[in-house]
Length: 70
Image (cartoon, rainbow, N blue to C red):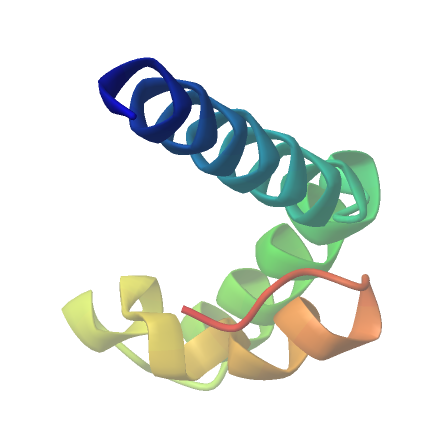
């Protein structure tokens, strides 16, 4: 019984890790980086300050590039 429980726990853990890895891999990091840089540059050009580096400035990049929204 204990061995079965340990095996089930291990299987659940491996499934969770593989699911998280797949979700992370779906994010196009090059797309996100370029989108983030453009959004920050636009904000700075418009006279923004330190707030240009907050997530809200480039929030749309998460969806646009297929990333999980934090």
